Amino acid sequence: MSQIRVRFAPSPTGYLHIGGLRTALYDYLFARSLGGKCILRIEDTDRNRLVEDAVENLIQSLEQLDLHFDEGPGIGGDYGPYIQSERLELYHREAERLLETGHAYYCFCTPETLDEMRRKQQEAKEFVKYDRRCLNLTPEQVQARLDAGESHVLRLKMPDDHEFTVEDLIRGTVQIDASQSDDQVLVKSDGFPTYHLAAVVDDHYMEISHVIRGEEWLSSTPKHIWLYQCLGWEPPKWVHLPLILNQDRSKLSKRMNDVSVESYLQKGYLKEALINFIALLGWHPADDREFYSLEELCQTFTLERVSKAGAVFDLTKLDWMNGHYLKELPLETIVERSLPYFDAAGLKVPEKDKLHRMVEVARPRCNLLADIPVYCRMFLETPNPQGKELQNLQSEDSKKVLSWFVNNLPSHFPLDAEKVDSLVKEALTATGLKAKAFYTPLRLALIGQAHGPDLPNTFAILGDDEALARIQAALEL
Image (cartoon, rainbow, N blue to C red; front, top):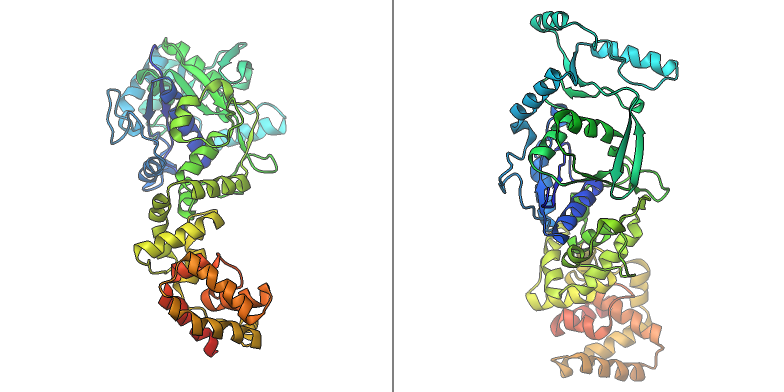
Protein backbone atom coordinates (compact mmCIF):
# COMPACT_ATOMS: atom_id res chain seq x y z
CA MET A 1 0.00 0.00 0.00
CA SER A 2 1.92 3.00 -1.23
CA GLN A 3 -0.73 5.65 -0.57
CA ILE A 4 -1.75 6.67 2.95
CA ARG A 5 -5.42 5.77 3.38
CA VAL A 6 -7.11 5.98 6.76
CA ARG A 7 -10.73 5.66 7.78
CA PHE A 8 -12.98 6.97 10.52
CA ALA A 9 -15.66 4.35 10.99
CA PRO A 10 -18.28 5.32 13.59
CA SER A 11 -21.34 3.30 14.47
CA PRO A 12 -24.62 5.25 14.22
CA THR A 13 -25.60 4.33 17.78
CA GLY A 14 -25.68 7.90 19.08
CA TYR A 15 -24.07 11.27 18.66
CA LEU A 16 -20.42 11.86 17.89
CA HIS A 17 -18.58 11.75 21.22
CA ILE A 18 -15.26 13.22 22.31
CA GLY A 19 -13.34 9.97 21.85
CA GLY A 20 -14.74 9.51 18.38
CA LEU A 21 -13.87 13.09 17.47
CA ARG A 22 -10.26 12.58 18.51
CA THR A 23 -10.00 9.44 16.37
CA ALA A 24 -11.53 11.27 13.42
CA LEU A 25 -9.22 14.25 13.96
CA TYR A 26 -6.06 12.13 14.18
CA ASP A 27 -7.12 10.24 11.05
CA TYR A 28 -7.66 13.54 9.29
CA LEU A 29 -4.41 15.14 10.47
CA PHE A 30 -2.34 12.07 9.66
CA ALA A 31 -3.76 11.84 6.15
CA ARG A 32 -3.40 15.55 5.46
CA SER A 33 0.15 15.70 6.84
CA LEU A 34 1.28 13.01 4.38
CA GLY A 35 -0.90 13.83 1.39
CA GLY A 36 -3.12 10.79 1.94
CA LYS A 37 -6.85 10.13 1.86
CA CYS A 38 -9.28 10.18 4.78
CA ILE A 39 -12.38 8.02 4.40
CA LEU A 40 -15.65 8.12 6.33
CA ARG A 41 -17.30 4.70 6.69
CA ILE A 42 -20.52 4.02 8.58
CA GLU A 43 -20.48 0.73 10.51
CA ASP A 44 -24.17 0.02 10.99
CA THR A 45 -24.21 -3.77 11.32
CA ASP A 46 -25.37 -3.74 14.95
CA ARG A 47 -29.02 -3.35 14.02
CA ASN A 48 -30.30 -3.41 17.61
CA ARG A 49 -28.43 -0.26 18.59
CA LEU A 50 -29.14 1.98 15.63
CA VAL A 51 -30.32 5.50 16.51
CA GLU A 52 -32.52 7.39 14.09
CA ASP A 53 -30.77 10.34 12.42
CA ALA A 54 -27.44 9.38 14.05
CA VAL A 55 -25.64 9.23 10.70
CA GLU A 56 -26.84 12.70 9.75
CA ASN A 57 -25.85 14.07 13.17
CA LEU A 58 -22.41 12.48 12.96
CA ILE A 59 -21.74 13.93 9.53
CA GLN A 60 -23.13 17.33 10.50
CA SER A 61 -20.91 17.52 13.61
CA LEU A 62 -17.82 16.65 11.58
CA GLU A 63 -18.65 19.24 8.94
CA GLN A 64 -19.27 21.90 11.60
CA LEU A 65 -15.71 21.28 12.75
CA ASP A 66 -14.35 21.59 9.18
CA LEU A 67 -13.34 17.91 9.01
CA HIS A 68 -14.15 17.19 5.38
CA PHE A 69 -13.48 13.66 4.14
CA ASP A 70 -12.21 12.56 0.75
CA GLU A 71 -14.57 9.60 0.41
CA GLY A 72 -17.72 8.50 2.16
CA PRO A 73 -21.53 8.62 2.23
CA GLY A 74 -22.75 11.57 0.20
CA ILE A 75 -19.21 12.18 -1.07
CA GLY A 76 -18.62 9.12 -3.20
CA GLY A 77 -15.36 7.46 -4.16
CA ASP A 78 -13.98 4.40 -5.93
CA TYR A 79 -14.31 2.03 -2.94
CA GLY A 80 -17.98 2.36 -2.02
CA PRO A 81 -20.56 1.84 -0.88
CA TYR A 82 -19.37 3.37 2.38
CA ILE A 83 -22.24 2.11 4.56
CA GLN A 84 -21.72 -1.46 5.77
CA SER A 85 -25.34 -2.52 5.54
CA GLU A 86 -24.98 -2.00 1.78
CA ARG A 87 -21.98 -4.37 1.59
CA LEU A 88 -23.50 -7.59 2.98
CA GLU A 89 -22.83 -9.67 -0.12
CA LEU A 90 -19.10 -9.01 0.24
CA TYR A 91 -19.02 -10.12 3.89
CA HIS A 92 -20.98 -13.29 3.16
CA ARG A 93 -18.60 -14.17 0.34
CA GLU A 94 -15.55 -13.89 2.58
CA ALA A 95 -17.32 -15.75 5.37
CA GLU A 96 -17.93 -18.64 2.97
CA ARG A 97 -14.24 -18.67 2.14
CA LEU A 98 -13.41 -18.98 5.83
CA LEU A 99 -15.86 -21.87 6.16
CA GLU A 100 -14.41 -23.67 3.17
CA THR A 101 -10.86 -23.38 4.48
CA GLY A 102 -11.79 -24.55 7.98
CA HIS A 103 -11.06 -21.22 9.63
CA ALA A 104 -14.70 -20.69 10.61
CA TYR A 105 -17.48 -22.94 11.86
CA TYR A 106 -21.20 -22.91 12.58
CA CYS A 107 -22.37 -22.48 16.18
CA PHE A 108 -25.95 -23.36 17.18
CA CYS A 109 -25.74 -22.54 20.90
CA THR A 110 -28.68 -20.60 22.27
CA PRO A 111 -28.21 -17.43 24.37
CA GLU A 112 -29.31 -19.44 27.42
CA THR A 113 -26.67 -22.08 26.75
CA LEU A 114 -23.98 -19.43 26.41
CA ASP A 115 -25.07 -17.68 29.61
CA GLU A 116 -24.87 -20.94 31.54
CA MET A 117 -21.45 -21.72 30.07
CA ARG A 118 -20.11 -18.29 31.09
CA ARG A 119 -21.57 -18.62 34.58
CA LYS A 120 -19.77 -21.89 35.20
CA GLN A 121 -16.50 -20.48 33.87
CA GLN A 122 -16.79 -17.46 36.14
CA GLU A 123 -17.54 -19.65 39.16
CA ALA A 124 -14.47 -21.76 38.32
CA LYS A 125 -12.45 -18.51 37.88
CA GLU A 126 -11.57 -19.51 34.33
CA PHE A 127 -11.02 -17.20 31.36
CA VAL A 128 -14.50 -16.62 29.94
CA LYS A 129 -14.62 -17.74 26.33
CA TYR A 130 -16.63 -19.99 24.06
CA ASP A 131 -15.87 -23.65 24.86
CA ARG A 132 -16.11 -24.79 21.22
CA ARG A 133 -18.84 -27.32 21.82
CA CYS A 134 -20.07 -26.85 18.23
CA LEU A 135 -16.60 -27.09 16.67
CA ASN A 136 -16.64 -30.87 16.40
CA LEU A 137 -20.06 -31.27 14.80
CA THR A 138 -19.82 -33.41 11.68
CA PRO A 139 -20.71 -31.91 8.30
CA GLU A 140 -23.84 -34.07 8.31
CA GLN A 141 -24.91 -32.80 11.74
CA VAL A 142 -24.32 -29.21 10.70
CA GLN A 143 -26.32 -29.63 7.50
CA ALA A 144 -29.18 -31.31 9.30
CA ARG A 145 -29.45 -28.44 11.78
CA LEU A 146 -29.23 -25.89 9.00
CA ASP A 147 -31.97 -27.72 7.08
CA ALA A 148 -34.08 -27.69 10.21
CA GLY A 149 -33.81 -23.90 10.30
CA GLU A 150 -31.99 -23.72 13.63
CA SER A 151 -30.71 -20.29 14.60
CA HIS A 152 -26.95 -20.10 14.27
CA VAL A 153 -23.91 -17.87 14.06
CA LEU A 154 -20.56 -18.22 12.36
CA ARG A 155 -17.43 -18.28 14.55
CA LEU A 156 -13.76 -17.75 13.81
CA LYS A 157 -11.54 -20.67 14.83
CA MET A 158 -8.60 -19.09 16.61
CA PRO A 159 -5.30 -21.00 16.69
CA ASP A 160 -4.19 -22.84 19.84
CA ASP A 161 -0.82 -22.30 21.53
CA HIS A 162 0.03 -19.26 19.46
CA GLU A 163 1.42 -15.89 20.44
CA PHE A 164 0.46 -12.93 18.30
CA THR A 165 2.83 -10.05 17.73
CA VAL A 166 1.22 -6.65 17.23
CA GLU A 167 3.54 -4.01 15.82
CA ASP A 168 1.91 -0.82 16.98
CA LEU A 169 3.19 2.57 15.82
CA ILE A 170 2.56 4.07 19.27
CA ARG A 171 3.14 1.14 21.64
CA GLY A 172 5.86 -0.70 19.80
CA THR A 173 5.84 -4.51 19.87
CA VAL A 174 2.99 -6.03 21.88
CA GLN A 175 2.72 -9.78 22.51
CA ILE A 176 -0.74 -11.28 23.09
CA ASP A 177 -1.32 -15.00 23.67
CA ALA A 178 -4.04 -16.65 21.60
CA SER A 179 -5.46 -18.26 24.75
CA GLN A 180 -6.72 -14.79 25.71
CA SER A 181 -8.81 -14.57 22.52
CA ASP A 182 -12.26 -16.02 22.05
CA ASP A 183 -13.60 -17.79 18.98
CA GLN A 184 -15.21 -14.56 17.87
CA VAL A 185 -18.63 -14.50 16.23
CA LEU A 186 -18.15 -13.33 12.63
CA VAL A 187 -21.72 -13.48 11.33
CA LYS A 188 -24.66 -13.09 13.68
CA SER A 189 -27.94 -14.99 13.59
CA ASP A 190 -29.58 -12.10 11.73
CA GLY A 191 -27.09 -12.50 8.88
CA PHE A 192 -25.22 -9.29 9.64
CA PRO A 193 -21.46 -9.43 10.26
CA THR A 194 -19.90 -8.37 13.52
CA TYR A 195 -17.45 -5.50 13.65
CA HIS A 196 -14.52 -7.90 13.50
CA LEU A 197 -15.31 -9.45 10.12
CA ALA A 198 -16.79 -6.33 8.51
CA ALA A 199 -13.94 -4.05 9.55
CA VAL A 200 -11.24 -6.42 8.29
CA VAL A 201 -13.01 -7.03 4.98
CA ASP A 202 -13.69 -3.33 4.42
CA ASP A 203 -10.19 -2.24 5.42
CA HIS A 204 -8.77 -4.68 2.88
CA TYR A 205 -11.05 -3.78 -0.02
CA MET A 206 -10.83 -0.06 0.73
CA GLU A 207 -7.02 -0.38 0.80
CA ILE A 208 -6.69 1.14 4.25
CA SER A 209 -3.01 1.59 5.08
CA HIS A 210 -3.27 2.50 8.78
CA VAL A 211 -5.98 1.57 11.29
CA ILE A 212 -6.13 4.33 13.92
CA ARG A 213 -8.43 3.53 16.84
CA GLY A 214 -8.67 3.57 20.65
CA GLU A 215 -6.53 1.32 22.80
CA GLU A 216 -9.60 -0.64 23.91
CA TRP A 217 -9.35 -2.40 20.54
CA LEU A 218 -5.80 -3.61 21.17
CA SER A 219 -6.97 -6.85 22.79
CA SER A 220 -9.07 -7.63 19.67
CA THR A 221 -6.18 -7.08 17.28
CA PRO A 222 -5.02 -10.75 17.36
CA LYS A 223 -8.42 -11.76 15.95
CA HIS A 224 -8.00 -9.24 13.18
CA ILE A 225 -4.42 -10.28 12.43
CA TRP A 226 -5.59 -13.91 12.28
CA LEU A 227 -8.41 -12.98 9.91
CA TYR A 228 -5.94 -11.29 7.59
CA GLN A 229 -3.78 -14.41 7.62
CA CYS A 230 -6.71 -16.74 7.03
CA LEU A 231 -7.89 -14.66 4.08
CA GLY A 232 -4.40 -14.30 2.64
CA TRP A 233 -4.27 -10.52 2.91
CA GLU A 234 -1.62 -8.06 4.05
CA PRO A 235 -2.71 -6.33 7.26
CA PRO A 236 -2.57 -2.55 7.70
CA LYS A 237 -0.32 -0.80 10.20
CA TRP A 238 -1.84 -0.63 13.68
CA VAL A 239 -2.20 2.56 15.72
CA HIS A 240 -3.92 2.37 19.11
CA LEU A 241 -4.56 5.74 20.74
CA PRO A 242 -4.36 6.31 24.52
CA LEU A 243 -7.51 6.50 26.60
CA ILE A 244 -9.19 9.81 27.37
CA LEU A 245 -9.57 10.07 31.14
CA ASN A 246 -11.68 11.92 33.70
CA GLN A 247 -9.95 14.17 36.20
CA ASP A 248 -9.73 11.21 38.61
CA ARG A 249 -7.99 9.25 35.80
CA SER A 250 -10.90 6.89 35.30
CA LYS A 251 -11.95 6.27 31.70
CA LEU A 252 -14.05 9.09 30.24
CA SER A 253 -17.58 7.81 30.52
CA LYS A 254 -20.92 8.91 29.13
CA ARG A 255 -22.34 8.29 32.60
CA MET A 256 -19.99 10.78 34.23
CA ASN A 257 -19.57 13.47 31.61
CA ASP A 258 -21.27 15.26 28.83
CA VAL A 259 -19.24 13.74 25.99
CA SER A 260 -21.40 14.66 22.98
CA VAL A 261 -19.57 16.92 20.52
CA GLU A 262 -22.89 18.39 19.41
CA SER A 263 -23.61 19.40 23.00
CA TYR A 264 -20.32 21.29 23.28
CA LEU A 265 -21.06 23.15 20.05
CA GLN A 266 -24.55 24.02 21.26
CA LYS A 267 -23.19 25.36 24.53
CA GLY A 268 -21.06 27.83 22.64
CA TYR A 269 -17.65 26.23 22.34
CA LEU A 270 -15.89 27.36 19.18
CA LYS A 271 -14.85 24.79 16.59
CA GLU A 272 -11.32 26.22 16.62
CA ALA A 273 -11.03 25.65 20.37
CA LEU A 274 -12.51 22.15 20.26
CA ILE A 275 -10.18 21.04 17.48
CA ASN A 276 -7.15 22.58 19.21
CA PHE A 277 -8.05 21.09 22.59
CA ILE A 278 -8.87 17.60 21.27
CA ALA A 279 -5.64 17.51 19.24
CA LEU A 280 -3.66 17.94 22.47
CA LEU A 281 -5.43 15.01 24.18
CA GLY A 282 -2.58 12.59 23.63
CA TRP A 283 -0.48 14.41 21.04
CA HIS A 284 2.38 16.63 22.15
CA PRO A 285 3.95 19.14 19.76
CA ALA A 286 7.71 19.51 19.55
CA ASP A 287 7.59 23.01 21.05
CA ASP A 288 5.63 24.48 23.95
CA ARG A 289 2.89 26.04 21.86
CA GLU A 290 -0.68 25.73 23.07
CA PHE A 291 -2.60 27.20 20.13
CA TYR A 292 -2.84 25.70 16.65
CA SER A 293 -5.21 26.27 13.78
CA LEU A 294 -6.48 23.23 11.91
CA GLU A 295 -4.16 24.11 9.02
CA GLU A 296 -1.17 24.30 11.37
CA LEU A 297 -2.09 20.96 12.92
CA CYS A 298 -2.20 19.39 9.45
CA GLN A 299 1.36 20.58 8.88
CA THR A 300 2.69 19.67 12.33
CA PHE A 301 0.96 16.44 13.39
CA THR A 302 2.91 13.17 13.56
CA LEU A 303 1.98 9.83 15.11
CA GLU A 304 5.45 9.66 16.65
CA ARG A 305 4.45 12.37 19.12
CA VAL A 306 1.29 10.60 20.30
CA SER A 307 1.73 9.36 23.86
CA LYS A 308 0.99 5.89 25.25
CA ALA A 309 -0.31 7.38 28.49
CA GLY A 310 -3.94 8.35 28.99
CA ALA A 311 -4.93 11.98 28.42
CA VAL A 312 -7.00 13.84 31.01
CA PHE A 313 -10.04 15.73 29.73
CA ASP A 314 -9.66 19.03 31.61
CA LEU A 315 -12.82 21.08 31.14
CA THR A 316 -11.21 24.07 32.84
CA LYS A 317 -8.50 24.11 30.20
CA LEU A 318 -11.08 23.81 27.42
CA ASP A 319 -12.95 26.81 28.85
CA TRP A 320 -9.71 28.80 29.03
CA MET A 321 -8.80 27.86 25.48
CA ASN A 322 -12.27 28.77 24.23
CA GLY A 323 -12.00 32.14 25.96
CA HIS A 324 -8.72 32.72 24.13
CA TYR A 325 -10.34 32.10 20.75
CA LEU A 326 -13.30 34.32 21.67
CA LYS A 327 -10.84 37.17 22.15
CA GLU A 328 -8.53 36.43 19.23
CA LEU A 329 -10.80 35.50 16.33
CA PRO A 330 -12.03 38.35 14.10
CA LEU A 331 -14.82 40.35 15.75
CA GLU A 332 -17.12 39.80 12.77
CA THR A 333 -16.73 36.03 13.21
CA ILE A 334 -17.69 36.14 16.89
CA VAL A 335 -20.62 38.48 16.18
CA GLU A 336 -21.99 36.16 13.51
CA ARG A 337 -21.61 33.02 15.62
CA SER A 338 -23.17 34.65 18.68
CA LEU A 339 -26.43 35.58 16.92
CA PRO A 340 -28.25 32.28 17.61
CA TYR A 341 -27.52 32.69 21.32
CA PHE A 342 -29.18 36.11 21.39
CA ASP A 343 -32.30 34.48 19.94
CA ALA A 344 -32.09 31.63 22.46
CA ALA A 345 -31.82 34.17 25.30
CA GLY A 346 -34.93 35.99 24.04
CA LEU A 347 -32.99 39.15 23.25
CA LYS A 348 -33.68 41.29 20.20
CA VAL A 349 -30.54 41.78 18.15
CA PRO A 350 -29.80 45.52 17.88
CA GLU A 351 -28.55 47.38 14.82
CA LYS A 352 -25.12 46.40 13.51
CA ASP A 353 -22.96 49.11 15.11
CA LYS A 354 -24.40 48.60 18.58
CA LEU A 355 -24.17 44.80 18.25
CA HIS A 356 -20.49 44.98 17.29
CA ARG A 357 -19.72 47.36 20.17
CA MET A 358 -21.50 45.08 22.65
CA VAL A 359 -19.75 41.91 21.50
CA GLU A 360 -16.38 43.64 21.45
CA VAL A 361 -16.86 44.65 25.09
CA ALA A 362 -18.31 41.29 26.11
CA ARG A 363 -15.93 38.79 24.56
CA PRO A 364 -12.87 39.46 26.79
CA ARG A 365 -15.13 38.73 29.75
CA CYS A 366 -16.69 35.50 28.41
CA ASN A 367 -15.60 31.90 27.89
CA LEU A 368 -18.49 30.69 25.71
CA LEU A 369 -20.54 32.13 22.89
CA ALA A 370 -23.60 31.58 25.06
CA ASP A 371 -22.09 33.89 27.70
CA ILE A 372 -22.06 36.87 25.33
CA PRO A 373 -25.83 37.63 25.29
CA VAL A 374 -25.91 37.05 29.05
CA TYR A 375 -23.31 39.78 29.44
CA CYS A 376 -24.98 42.03 26.85
CA ARG A 377 -28.44 41.85 28.43
CA MET A 378 -27.67 44.96 30.52
CA PHE A 379 -27.37 47.02 27.32
CA LEU A 380 -30.62 45.75 25.85
CA GLU A 381 -33.00 45.81 28.81
CA THR A 382 -33.91 48.84 30.93
CA PRO A 383 -32.50 48.50 34.44
CA ASN A 384 -35.01 47.61 37.14
CA PRO A 385 -33.13 48.07 40.43
CA GLN A 386 -34.45 46.26 43.48
CA GLY A 387 -33.37 45.83 47.08
CA LYS A 388 -29.95 47.22 47.94
CA GLU A 389 -29.46 48.64 44.46
CA LEU A 390 -32.67 50.64 44.77
CA GLN A 391 -31.69 51.88 48.23
CA ASN A 392 -28.32 52.93 46.89
CA LEU A 393 -29.91 54.95 44.09
CA GLN A 394 -32.18 56.71 46.60
CA SER A 395 -29.28 58.03 48.69
CA GLU A 396 -28.40 61.74 48.68
CA ASP A 397 -24.99 61.06 47.11
CA SER A 398 -26.62 59.14 44.26
CA LYS A 399 -29.11 61.93 43.62
CA LYS A 400 -26.22 64.38 43.48
CA VAL A 401 -24.38 62.30 40.84
CA LEU A 402 -27.43 61.58 38.69
CA SER A 403 -28.69 65.16 38.84
CA TRP A 404 -25.34 66.48 37.68
CA PHE A 405 -25.40 64.24 34.61
CA VAL A 406 -29.04 65.00 33.78
CA ASN A 407 -28.21 68.71 33.81
CA ASN A 408 -24.90 68.53 31.96
CA LEU A 409 -25.07 65.64 29.48
CA PRO A 410 -27.33 67.15 26.79
CA SER A 411 -25.08 70.15 26.17
CA HIS A 412 -22.22 67.80 25.24
CA PHE A 413 -24.09 65.60 22.71
CA PRO A 414 -22.94 63.86 20.60
CA LEU A 415 -20.71 62.07 23.10
CA ASP A 416 -17.45 60.35 22.31
CA ALA A 417 -14.90 58.64 24.56
CA GLU A 418 -12.93 61.84 25.11
CA LYS A 419 -16.05 63.80 26.10
CA VAL A 420 -17.17 61.07 28.50
CA ASP A 421 -13.78 60.98 30.21
CA SER A 422 -13.83 64.78 30.50
CA LEU A 423 -17.36 64.80 31.89
CA VAL A 424 -16.54 62.14 34.48
CA LYS A 425 -13.55 64.11 35.72
CA GLU A 426 -15.64 67.28 35.86
CA ALA A 427 -18.45 65.50 37.72
CA LEU A 428 -16.08 63.97 40.26
CA THR A 429 -14.79 67.44 41.08
CA ALA A 430 -18.24 69.04 41.14
CA THR A 431 -19.82 66.45 43.42
CA GLY A 432 -16.78 66.04 45.67
CA LEU A 433 -17.50 62.31 46.04
CA LYS A 434 -15.05 59.46 46.30
CA ALA A 435 -14.82 56.98 43.42
CA LYS A 436 -17.12 54.25 44.79
CA ALA A 437 -19.86 56.68 45.84
CA PHE A 438 -19.64 58.29 42.41
CA TYR A 439 -19.36 55.33 40.03
CA THR A 440 -21.80 52.93 41.69
CA PRO A 441 -25.01 54.95 41.20
CA LEU A 442 -23.98 55.96 37.70
CA ARG A 443 -23.46 52.33 36.67
CA LEU A 444 -26.64 51.22 38.44
CA ALA A 445 -28.55 53.81 36.45
CA LEU A 446 -26.93 52.92 33.13
CA ILE A 447 -26.67 49.11 33.27
CA GLY A 448 -28.42 48.02 36.47
CA GLN A 449 -25.28 46.73 38.20
CA ALA A 450 -22.37 48.16 40.13
CA HIS A 451 -19.68 46.65 37.92
CA GLY A 452 -19.36 46.61 34.17
CA PRO A 453 -17.39 47.97 31.23
CA ASP A 454 -15.71 51.36 31.34
CA LEU A 455 -18.00 54.35 31.03
CA PRO A 456 -16.91 55.49 27.54
CA ASN A 457 -17.84 52.07 26.17
CA THR A 458 -21.06 52.00 28.16
CA PHE A 459 -22.18 55.41 26.81
CA ALA A 460 -21.11 54.47 23.27
CA ILE A 461 -23.14 51.23 23.34
CA LEU A 462 -26.27 52.76 24.84
CA GLY A 463 -26.15 55.91 22.72
CA ASP A 464 -26.67 59.46 23.93
CA ASP A 465 -30.47 59.46 24.21
CA GLU A 466 -30.75 56.04 25.84
CA ALA A 467 -28.02 56.83 28.36
CA LEU A 468 -29.71 60.09 29.36
CA ALA A 469 -33.12 58.42 29.56
CA ARG A 470 -31.78 55.71 31.91
CA ILE A 471 -30.12 58.26 34.19
CA GLN A 472 -33.34 60.33 34.29
CA ALA A 473 -35.38 57.22 35.09
CA ALA A 474 -33.02 56.29 37.91
CA LEU A 475 -33.17 59.84 39.32
CA GLU A 476 -36.96 59.69 39.38
CA LEU A 477 -36.77 56.65 41.65
